[in-house]
Amino acid sequence: MTEFGEDQLVQAFKALGHPTRLAILGWLKDGDSFPPQDQPAETVGVCLKHIQARANVSQSTASQFMATLQRADLVICTRIGQFSHYRRNEQVIAKLGKAFGTEV
Image 1 (cartoon, rainbow, N blue to C red):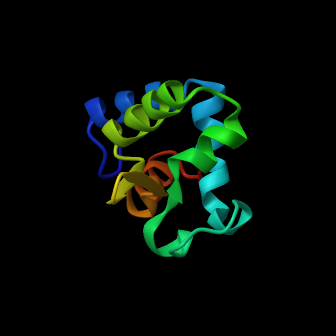
Image 2: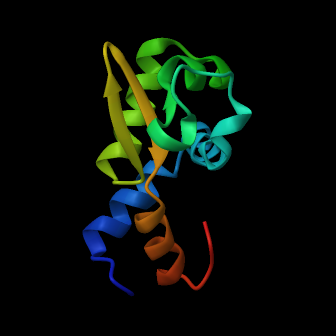
């Protein structure tokens, strides 16, 4: 499959196999739909606390969801002080879409 190893595909699909993680990846497509932050979401990503609030899950569950997406290389984490901010890894997502002839 185009530019994707089998292991990377399996990891990506496992990460997207949970409805909330799939929803989070969709939400991150429009970082400005989250509450305002000190730094723009398109630059640093969306703060975990905003993702947690929208997903209506505990902080630890939100952290686990984001760690799974990060291990699959679908999101990029930026630490600012004690806060983690996440944005989509558009290059990897584009490769995933190309592997199946569609956009994700």
